[in-house]
Image (cartoon, rainbow, N blue to C red):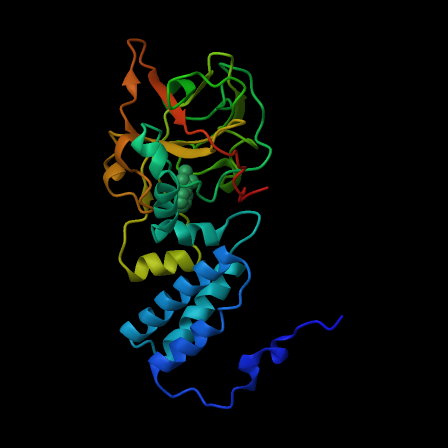
Length: 304
Ligand code: BEZ
Ligand code: FE
């Protein structure tokens, strides 16, 4: 059977030069996408081309600037490895990860679902499975003690048992354990399974804010923009349960001034919580995480 190749297509017979205008060029570029068989890819590429050409024309991007941008993207790739995912960091500092999360969960939010927040570059695969009530902070971890009591619920309030809850946080010193040779491997990280009442609980330390990594191209961009580089104190959660859309979120300490100027725009609306101080001086965080029905998905894990 003869395979159809692009040169067999009728438009390969054209012998008309593309007029040298931005409009005619855009029409030709858009036409080059019209035979894309995957409808979603076609939709995404059509819109990407429209915005990309519109953007380059709007700012009258010069060739020298295009080279800088391409070099920036190459360096984002080179700065990504087992220690750090610079690509995720880029999506985060541009507010793109937060926007995509909000759009993805619009229906759940309207029905009282928990707001999402970006996964960020520091979730690790194979976080240790721990028992309910476990202390996830290894000996010597500084900071005030924190008790987390969580429940995983459906939008109608039904407890979701057997859900997988991933959590991780930076030490009060401002670093995740994988960034810090002074911390035990997998310190302040855990995977829990909810009980039949949808509950999970653990002990930890009250987190502190930290600076995002600025040793790569994202750091250069933040400096050129004269931006703040701090994230507010937070704990990360990813909740996965059969029959429910996966929720990735973060819970922020509303007392941290950085909660109102998060460099990655993750600290939104209802995710700011008061960490209650109990009479014994320890902090308590009571938490309901509400999931929408749908297909479970395991998010891409940025770190081994
Ligand atoms: C984080 O929350 O772990 C994070 C998110 C974006 C950039 C850096 C860190
Ligand atoms: Fe974080």
